[in-house]
Length: 405
Ligand code: FEO
Image (cartoon, rainbow, N blue to C red; front, side):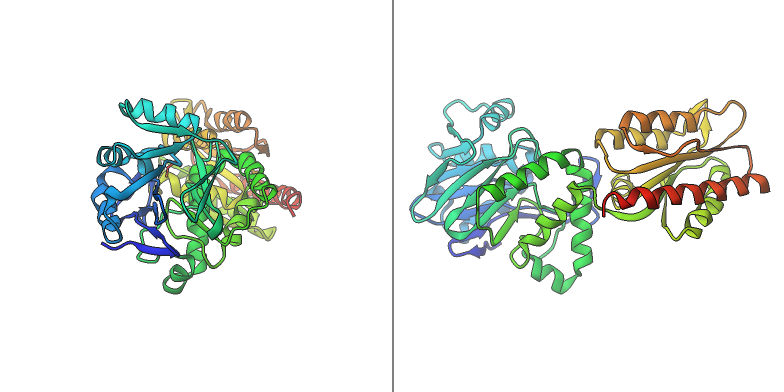
């Protein structure tokens, strides 16, 4: 397995995880990559490692360029195990290697490994290290994606190694954006950026805005962004930065996502007239049944929509379990700038729609209430109520969406 040169004397030496479909609960239909980089200079430098299972692949790629035992510097941008998982193996091979990481990175390494004897120097934003002709500059990015995270900027090459930020889960033989687009499409690439942002970075939108502003203030010239997952942005690095800024600023499509589950199809039957009402106002609709859809796909579709309607039957006076699970998961992602409402069928006591609204309030979302509740099967008057609810909801969505123009 060969290394791939991304800049003069800078090589991708990562691993391609073609079969992974479950990335700590996040569905990855296209697999992923663990990107890391080797820099040939007076002091040969390795930036990040890979998931432990892929250490052999990483060392194989390094060997295609140099003997790994010649590495003198090891930068650990992020300790999460998909990147820091081979750190111990690297240090075992290179006991004197000089490690650079953040203070929190060092603390995190202590919790994962016995780091007695590891030669660690902690660094802060703006600190620079010369490794020969090239200069590495470190930029702390706490909570993007973990408290320990940082990026490494290779000054002379205008290369930003951005760890999780700007990544996507794509196992592909293409290493660069232009190569990927040539064999797939730009919309596929954009969709994978949105998917990654929605499922991993949604809670950190405010930090993303601040961090991009900080990097812009540092005046760094960037002509390539190399994340730790997926393709490297060499043709259009600004594209992904702009996508991040737009998402962090609440931009999305004027669309309503209907997320639902159903027991005996009664809740499902409410969707048709609600959808007709929404579409009568000229607003697009997407429908997802939770039991038929992976959670991370539902989260991505939520993020791509200005508004969401949640359909839930009442089961034992509370929400249907898949709906409750979805809303709890969504709350953890701290969503913002979205409008929501709920509907559902009940047999005797009801309670699910009320619970859904309580969850919306906990999330601080823009609420349209009351929702629609129907006893058992919908009759024609219920269908009319659903249609009017859909129209009213769509009107509110159109007004709300203008705030983000
Ligand atoms: Fe790809 Fe936060 O690890």
